[in-house]
Length: 338
Image (tube, rainbow, N blue to C red):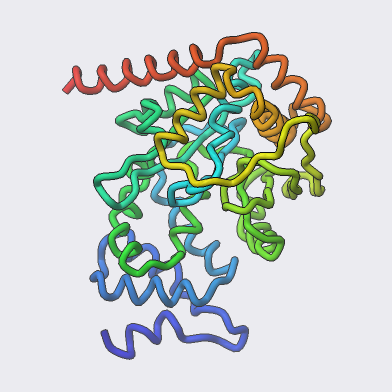
């Protein structure tokens, strides 16, 4: 590999920052111009120089690899990390389904997902039968149903191709952080989560100017599904800290427990069908966070009531089935046109 290669990426100036070749390095990785050994070395170097400024350089390079030229600015990007959720079920998917029926497309939600590196595993969206075969079809779903599920393998194939290297290194490399914020439709709003307050400043600096407004939720897992009382940090065109409480204090608190994908999917389906009454308040709180972040309500309590009223007015298990049918139609059309 040689000292010359490493010095280009580990050489530091007086300000203790990586040299200015960071952007060039990331671009060369995405273009496949480096060997696996050099990519591994570069990713380790970038990992150990965890600076928002360095990550922003890489983010600028990734922006040039977008696959959609159409922007849906009024949408909310739900930034799930690049790995499967292990504890507590996905709540925001159900909340987004409920809010998709708001008049005048009040809330459009954009989810990112990807099959894990192992070919035998699937993403939660695959298990819900709402995965499309093209990024354009995900965009069609977002425009027509106010909810879209984008597979990173379709709009960021360069990063997906690095999966085996990242798996072997077993590190949270630069792409693990950045791909959460590489939205193919350019949303104005973003919701993400961090494990501790120490990470809040990092993401605040990293995402400054990238979104009109973004929210950072404190959670045990880096998934922005609120399942316990916590805090929401909002930055962008306004800055505030919002305490997230659960109005329905009679419901027993949600307990963390191990979930496999089948149980995740069953939970979402049962929740939307109204069977899990003891967990409906989670749906309402998460819906309230989305509404408040997008500026649709003046407070969390107002959003909570709106989501609850919507939930009591419709059979959302049927809405989910309609989304699945629309996905089937899009996928069938693609196969038929081949």
